[in-house]
Length: 238
Image 1 (cartoon, rainbow, N blue to C red):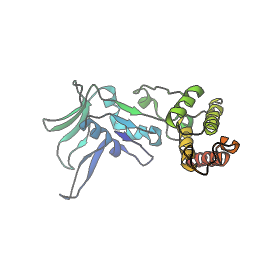
Image 2: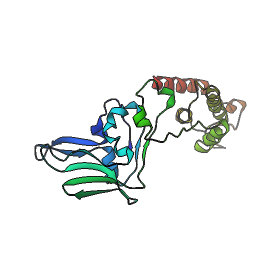
Image 3: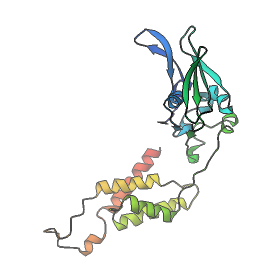
Image 4: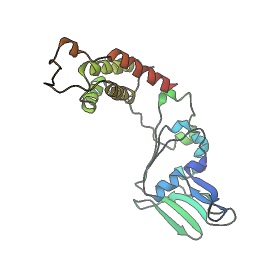
């Protein structure tokens, strides 16, 4: 299960909370992304995690992240069942009702992932020590230029050779400086953008094509399309 936090997130979106029940006209417990993932026996991946204030959002879960069971709410405003989150001994996650409690138990196969880009870590929310030490941080470096070229060729086999070389060169140039290093996603999007903007290659032997000529060696409008694709990515980054 994928979710993307943002600055509006609270523990309600991640854990859950009381929300109006339109059928009965009262407040009832509504599970958030984490409890829904446990109930559905799925992993939870928080993409671009630091777009939300995780210290605030995950505050009620710090005890749970230390392998203990914790109460996170109640099923109704007055009384109702206590909502607990804990850890089970089985591989699969499960939800059980026991002695007036509704217990969401993450199985041994359950995983909670968070992704973020360290390049913008100083411009968005930061993780406090209490939260950071409860996760294993796994840096994922950008792939090498040769690996990127191979990926580009496999992903876009119809991309003209000069466009392939130009995008590979852009990737290598960015990777050469730690302040501009980027992963391959932006450059793969450039290739997709170029293919969408280029005219289809006519099949060999079509009438009126006249066969290969010297003018066919270069991709039409390649500099303009590359510049537009690059400018678009810069606008998206702002």
